[in-house]
Each structure stands twice: as structure tokens, then as C-alpha cells.
Amino acid sequence: MSDPNQRLIAWQAKTHTGRVKEMLDTLRPDMLEHYKAVVTQLYDMEAKARQVLGSAGAQTILYVPYLNFARQLYKLSRQKGISGEAFVLAASILLDKWAARGLDADVLAAIRTDVFDVAPPTP
Image (cartoon, rainbow, N blue to C red; front, side, top):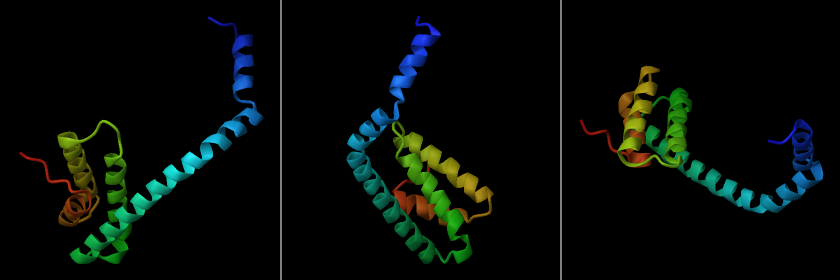
């Protein structure tokens, strides 16, 4: 076990701003490419969700909450370790949550199915 002074010295060395900047400058190009890919995926997902909303005749004022549902599904779909039946059940729970907030369950189900290709859970 290291004494407090050693820990403080190690923390100061690790958080030295010049060193941190150097590390970030090295990582930034890859971070930027990753961010671009994610933003593009998110944009594509939202465009598909808007198409579903338009086809379903959803009120424009409700687009924001429907898109928030879609964004939560998107975030869930990107989590490591969740797929298959676990993802189907989690998507169903999200659908129930947003339906309880007053959104149309059929429109939410259309987003889940048409945008994310997730079927309803089997009984």
C-alpha cells in the first residue's frame, strides 16, 4: 500500500496538462472518426423514425417524445452484452414506458419494428 504522498505524486504526474494534451492529441483523430460514424448512424435512425411517424399520421407536436423513444432504443441497441431475447424484452419495457406517458403504442411498435427490426416479445 502506497502512502498518501506517493499517491499524490502519481496523480499529479498522471494529470499533468501537457501529458494529457499530448495523449488527447494522439487519440483525437480516431475519436473523431468514431464520433462521425455514430452521428451518421443516429441521423439515419432518426430519419427512418420520422418516416414511420409520417406514415402513421403522428401529430408533429409529438415527434420529439417519439424520437426520444427511438433514441433510447438506439442507445440500448449499442450496449454490449444485450441482444436477442434480452433486447426484445428491454425494448418492450421501453415501449410500455412511453405508452404510459401517453404515446400511441401502435406507433411505438412501428418504430421498434420498422426502424430497429425488433419483433414483439413472444408470450
